[in-house]
Length: 614
Image (tube, rainbow, N blue to C red):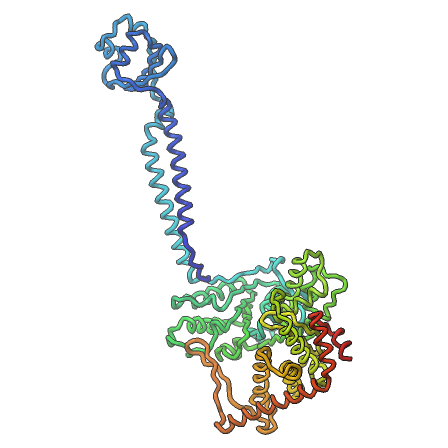
């Protein structure tokens, strides 16, 4: 069970204390009303009572118990007094001078103390003390019991269980758009959970563990839930970080408890999300073999080894960092099946958008294929976020339906950030920005290898003063050197346009230069696309896990080669710079038209832009 978050119990204890005090006050008030019914009567002494009797003012004299005397006067007012318990009333009055005739004229009544009020008045003082002491003991025992329960549950697994019959929370493969190959791999797991005997009779061993590998947001957790939903078995969901505690041995105890529960309810699925939090390579941190994380990992390895052929429990884990996992986790017999979940292509993006748009009121003009085309490299979570942002934008404008423009604006908001229309540029900066973005767009349009321009805008978004949105016509998995050179030229087109039209440069191209430099260095050191250095890579990047995360680059080349790498990078950037200058000088009039329209309208869509440069 995951450690309960540390919360202040002060307010809760204070509320309980206030409730106890209020209850005791109410009980005391009730007892006071029962035991003091004549609290409003005037108290007098015996001499004053005798004077009233001799004056003939006493109407009724009531004896209550052995000492209490209640007096009712002729005007119906009440008096109270007390006498000695051992002395009779008549003897007392005669001693104080009351005559026999005056005694005969008195209406004397005697009330016996045998009712429930009498006994309640007798036991109420002790009863209140008992209630107060009992309440204090009850609160103390309750707190101790809660602490004992938390102590006993400290080593228990806090896995969230979704029962096989809990239909509201079940997910099946039809609810997961895309990931066709991944679903095909997982269908064997479903078949084993449904028809395990078929495999056991043939001596076949279904994978003990399935490792889902893919970028964040690609639907690894959703696929694991879909496996449990298709197989109609219990699903135990826990995060890798929930095993690790500051106390050594707690994580291993939780692992044992989790697998014990799964075996008792088998067939079942145990899903460990972000397993790299506990499954990193051993021996890379402080503490040696007594490290809590390493003990937890060792217990996971032992539990997975302890599965019998008849055990119908499959462990599914998810991570986006398979390179840091311990080799013992990846060997056959543990996580011996790896399912890779890539970012969706355009067809899968369209299917994902259709799933997430089912409960959203889209206008008839909304074309999801256009949205899918504009979102290359987006994960399923990103696509869901886009439709959610579009709904928020529509609600902000008090609309009842979501339009195509809302969806397109949501894409740009996710990519670049919200619009900053309050950021007012002076006319000179606005003109420079228009020619800068127009330079990007012109170079991209007239470069044969560059992606087409979909939108040009000088409205500030996020940290960008303006932007040029260019997107591929279809998904690409391979890129050529010519495409990279075209991209470099597009990145430098804004700076070239500033030089050509204003004979000066600004800081607006700083981000473009940084991106161009990184891309050119990757062409030389990683892709082997330098004509001077040849087809080889330079340097080796590795991650060192010791005190935190540190990425270092191991140089496997000399200082002379490093200088040649710098020269090759400079050559590529200059080559792209000359290409951008050539295209802008050749189409200078079209760039001027685009910039002037941008100054006036601030935004150009693809059709408008292509009409200007046609």
